[in-house]
Image (cartoon, rainbow, N blue to C red; front, side):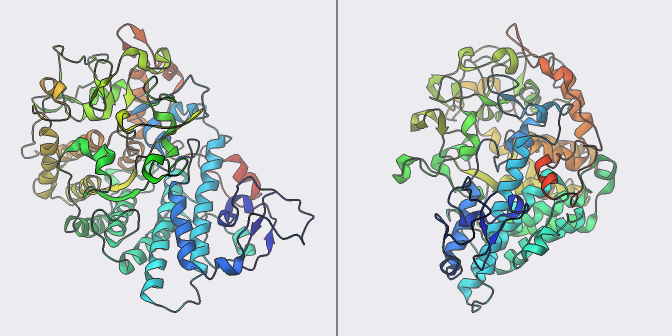
Length: 586
């Protein structure tokens, strides 16, 4: 049983410590001690009196948890936002490599997945750090520094709770000052309650945080809080996430106005579009004007430590044969590649008609593509992340008969920058975006469309983003080798609100592909079951240059009213002995 300490230093030995244990006080998460020993001073623990007299250090500990994840519990949620949608296949050595396979076919998905248990526990451990930091400031004099620290901490707590809500619908809201007995009796908040509780944290942060300029690394600030408020209100505006009670017919205009209010703050801030699309995903441009809030990472060459502050969430996603440990996960789908096809420079409604069309570097192609394809998807015959010395071939796929030949590029650095390698793992130093400017402007465009203003500013935002992508069709661009295979145009006036909605949906997919958004976007729009079941039918017929793959999708099926949210882990349900209710259908 895990040994956890409360504010007074007393040990809490209940089953609930698995869920809400204050992980900050334990230096090793695997530390165990016999329940019968009560008088031995714990080793590897921080003295409570010291801890609670150092609010700034406790807030730093809460920040540290932002990047304290692992491939089996990635806080960027790529297995759920991308793999559980139509953007990518799992990858790896086969269906049994990691426990993620049921999350991409849904038909075999059960609450017993260890990945759910780990992610739930780690997110609540992060919340525990936030609550401990808040408790340390209860009796503090209300100085500007304390006010700032409290606001930063509530921003962080809102961030972690947002992840929990997106995954599991209704979750327990544990706040500072709760006794162990209260924690142990806390049930899940309703959907509306938990959304309001998260918004309350971000609202406090917005009202009390200082302004920040681009380049300020890693700390919460007022504009980031505004962006997160917009994100929360946008998702809440469409309903509760289940298809019967979610989508365009359920839009709450009062919440849409909140999205407009807070995205206006971002629009009028120092943040902006980065000039070149490909630069957004290069380490040299980390914390640029595009980056409103990002989890900060580094490699050992940057900071002189053994491993750096590595991005372990993406450690499996390196390309086979390019990196020392390129485990070849996060494999873009043929459906995603096809979505970049254009006709007269605009997205094709029938993009999947010639399903297995492939693109070959320098060869004539039946189709033209949105330039953002060549920044997002690594394909045989093309340079890996713009570097010709690392040109990809079919040999750079680990299990092509299962997952095909494409690879992901956005979240992994250029190979020429070197690598951090500790057999059998691969560490990357690339930041994880939480909020980037273009994402927030697309939220604004979506809210404008829903408010009825679809041929004014909404159209302007979409065309501004497309204009940036269009600049890649030049002899000097990062993808100059693909310029003859690209075509992208701007939209004229939309004929209807539905046409504007369709364009917005396309733009979010193309702009944010493989960045962890797709599943959650489809859920907001009430389109998961129709989109994914159609995808399963087409993707099981994948073929690349004679090699079939994706055949396992024959067993896939998405059930509306069930699969919109993931099941709460069996372990967590067992620990609380009937206190929680499981999500619908599981």
